[in-house]
Image 1 (tube, rainbow, N blue to C red):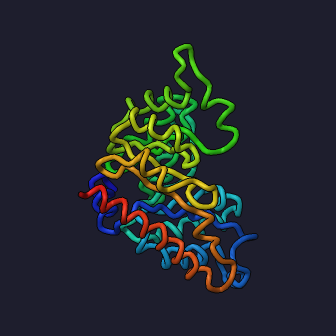
Image 2 (cartoon, rainbow, N blue to C red):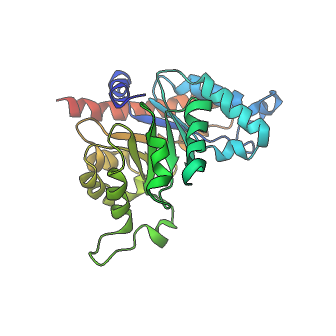
Length: 272
């Protein structure tokens, strides 16, 4: 999906919501365990319930890999089931070099029908470039994350008092364009989001942490929205685990609608 297509879909649905598909067998409703593929059945019902409100879906590959071959089969079925007008992110956090990075890019862009892959930039330019080679495909590079351990490295400052995450974002931005490169910025880092937006004024930002992690949609929008919207807000647990009963899909729909409705108000404000 191209940047132009993504923006058009955001305005068509009046939403910049990304739903994280992170199924855990211990957490999904117990009645689904009677199905041949409980994970796919769970995802299928979540997708059916939320796709009218979400412009993107983000399966975290760890939850599928943990199930071995069956998990990969569930992931492939899920990816093939997603509507064609949705932006599909493989949250794989790959970060290798050379032919290994190229093989990862082939996995998610050719073997599997993904639009984007999350990438860790620690190994430098040759760990990111293979994901920037195909038109309409994206690398989503970790910029500033919301976990406690982010303080270990990401916020360290150099002699010019620039934090490491800012240096990384500036450097990585020179390797691609706003047409094929996004950055991950945690919603619980809203105070730094405005600074990051000044560093990459045109790039899309994938923002996890709204919902279960306590991030504020209003703060993220105020600090991070640009003239092309420039945001994909990911919500996972607050939507997919809104209920553990047989009505889990209806509860997920309700939560997705709540976020989409708020997003629609911000989009109308941007269009004035």
